[in-house]
Length: 220
Figure (tube, helix red, strand yellow):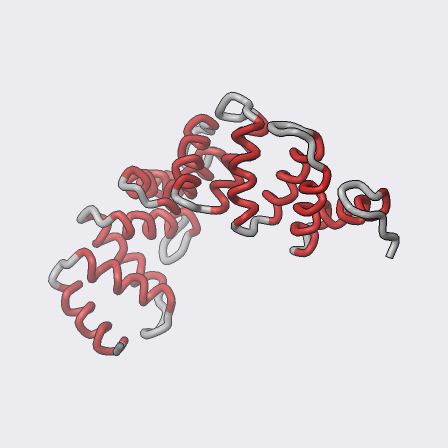
């Protein structure tokens, strides 16, 4: 493995219009691990690659516009680039696009489209999207309320380590929404979220120990 040689040949290939090389060079310029970090040059490489239909570059370009990295922040162009990437199946582009639709950034608020893109990203394993799919199912926003589906997506996100998903899953188990009441499992998930520093979960774990709900009473 020789990053300096990789950089040399990526540059040569990129200058000849190779979309994959332009994308790879853009990534190197973004991280600064091999070459000096330069967000502006990285943006240019992503732009050139994206124009040739490179889905990963379209995602990076969309994020650059969304966050104002290497260029001026432009939510409208972020929506455009992320849509191109999302439609080609880039999971994190689907998640970012869902956030823009949810917040009404660069487009009108559209909770239905937000849910659809969160769900698409969730199915590809994006933890944040899994949590958000669960939250929208739980609240009935952008989709018909469905506690069983909310429970399902919270469970998946919780198992991937999302503290908020662990906490919300615990609440569903505690109250019997989407499943039978299970105080023991609820306590276990409260405790998992509490260990990650989630304040609400720490209180719930403390309350469980205090009252002996889902766990043996323990005042220590």
